[in-house]
Image (tube, rainbow, N blue to C red; front, side, top):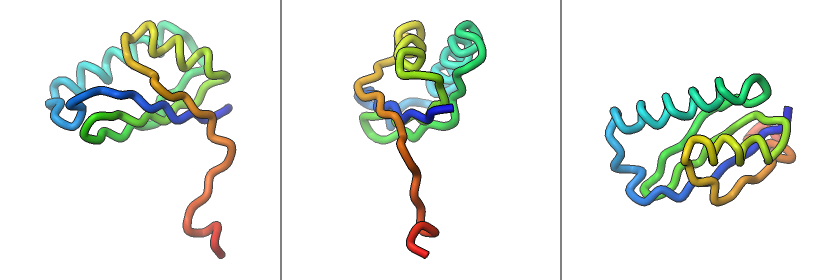
Length: 90
């Protein structure tokens, strides 16, 4: 299944409380359940003013629909074409 990186501009994201992050996570998981199989949230990285999410999805439209239903921004949705890591240098 294709992998996507989603950039979400959320001012003050780095200051969200654990309770806020839990509520956002619960909302996301609920939307994923409602959308049915074919969308998987892998992980997210929270920075000062952005959240970067990794999703597995059949296409970009499903990722954007998740954002729409959840009320989350999806400022950039980029399909991952390949992955590299330090072992790529070997």
